[in-house]
Image 1 (cartoon, rainbow, N blue to C red):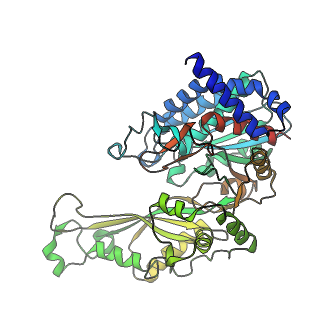
Image 2 (spheres, rainbow, N blue to C red):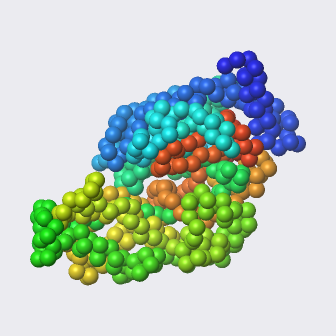
Image 3 (cartoon, helix red, strand yellow):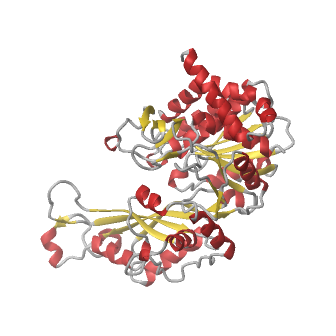
Length: 500
């Protein structure tokens, strides 16, 4: 880095600190000048740490690099100052439990994931494991790579904050308890085996709450503080001639369909019983009922819709209509309050080039079921199994691969109020949101026996999670969005706020 670039970055870091601390808090900004300087000085090493992490993909669905991923996560924690770091075996992929005792009055929990989604390099404009930094119009310099924003980028920014505080010769203002897993992308089937170990539970009980690092800024600068997340069940339905007792036990010539049943059609007919004709209303018999949307949640959504752009949302999602052509507010009320049955993929028989006249003996559908408050994963699965049996599809295999219950945290929780305080001090009026439509296993913290607050925090921006060209902003040209150093500073500010 040239001296000129170094001075520029220092100036940017100073501007970031002033923004976070408020223009009338020059003394406070000066108090953080040492940490600010460390963030600037360590920028390149912090970015390299993220690039090296992206280069090691741990993919739970493919059992790829799970042991190596846990080892890397453990080493990252040690390097950031955690004194006790343990790799925790489970019936699936290993997790990591780490503690950092700073002698502080307050203790904060961190939830990390080290696994990422699958990827097809042919679909990417930049190799997904090289984590190249490229120019992206409207954003500046971004890092493209699998896991860049989901979730390694924000997690690397949090780790960089710990390095900067220690590098400035300071003690961390809070103690930390980290729980990391390698199965989030397959529904966290064994997260309970990590969290409910006696020593882990004992450490978590000392925490004010648990948060997951995130990149919460939309391109227009809007920041959402979510108070929970939907639950999820990931499963596969399999129809086969062998299990059904009808249809072939191996692929046969398609001409024989005139006298042989089809497992593929059998699956399609079963799927059709799960939802209404338009596919939008769940019709599974005795399915758990969602809690009705509350007046408080309606008010949150109405307020949020005043600052969120419907057209920008449609453009980013590549859609032209909401379900039933609902107005913007009502569409979001439905998003927040309704469970879903979604088909992720359908596979059966021949799908290669040209045709192949066969009657396949097997067909499978990948589904995810999203759950809202008052719904339980186990109840949803039990209802699905019973429904299929009652409708004459009891032979269809229901293979659950992961999932968990919804999660909720009140806005009055200290964990949430600290977020709001940091954001408002930065001149950001955050949007309160009832719950993410997506899912993360916060239930293991908010549910029994711990019953803790849990949430997400972090400035910065990224997008493309689970998709090609996933990115995370490193040097922002958008005044409404922080780059990597700004994200690091947001974590510094949050930890100091939580220390109060």
